[in-house]
Image (cartoon, rainbow, N blue to C red; front, side, top):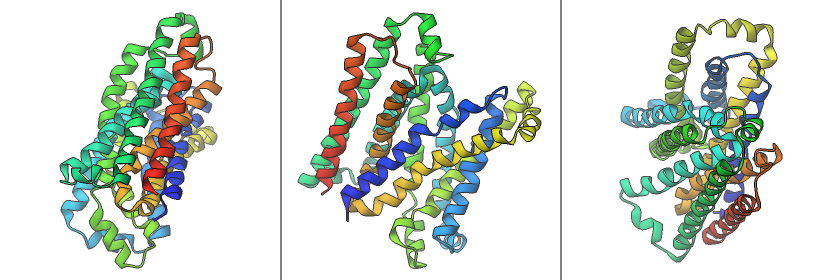
Amino acid sequence: MNPVMGTLVFAMGGLAGAVFALPFRGIKGVKYESYWLLYAIAGLLVFPLALALGTCPSSFKVLGEVPASTLAQCAGFGALWGLGGLTWGLMIRYLGIGLGLAIGCGLCSATGTLIPPVVTGHAGDLVATAGARIVLGGVVGSLAGIALVGLAGKFKEGELSEEAKKKAVAEFDFRKGMLVALFSGIASAGMNFGLQSGGALEKAAAAHGTPAAWCGMPVLMVVLWGGLVVNAAWCLWQNAKNKSAGDYAVMAKKPAYALLAGLAGVIWACQFACQKAGEPMMGDLKYIAFAVVMASAIFFSTLLGVFLGEWKGTGARTKGCLALGVVVLVVSFVVISLGGK
């Protein structure tokens, strides 16, 4: 066990989750569903397959050694995440990177962290020891930080003119964005449900000599493939509905667009690769991994939102609430690390 290092690995995953959408800003004149399909192929199919085979060469043998029900459960929860993931980009379009990820990740963190131990009969692990209680306090603190960042977003809604809001976030719409974030945040918790359902896969990978840090990669591959099915089906349906299939010819002529979309997918998938790689360092406290990744994503995305000017022109109350939320998140990371140690 090395909970401090594990927390740092989770934080690296959060950083990936915060910046993954930046490459999309370089894609112009292409419909959302078209570049999202390339994002999905790269991040949900190619990257997890390469990562699994690179770290666990026996991945396909591992898949054949576990019950089909395990694979179905992992892929099914991945499909649930897929439904939430489809609207993740829309949430960012309506709320901006800083506020959008704060709200979505907050809901995702709460449901994805606290529900799995309860439904698996391990709710007692949340308060079993002094260390576990400190860690749980840190998780609750991170949720408080998330709430403060969300409150700052609400203040921002009331302070800025429509022109100022649109300048920072072209399609800013707080009401529509909150509705999307509510659905996206809760459904996206399916990612953690899937990642925590693959214990049999991890044991099989370990039996084939896979190092502990990489035993979760076959699990990640199956979960992301479940999400791929939903994402690809939706994108192709939108291509037919909006007659946007010609976008792929545009991207073929401008390969930089395809590379940017694929890069976004790989960066996004890295956050959960970090989660599974860091879990073995946490021992019995690995259930906090998802919360730390999500809180880290909010921390870094908030800083990124400030850098991109998404909070420019807001008043002292809004900026103070935002700053307090960031401080609470940082303190929560420290508390979680100390509790784990």
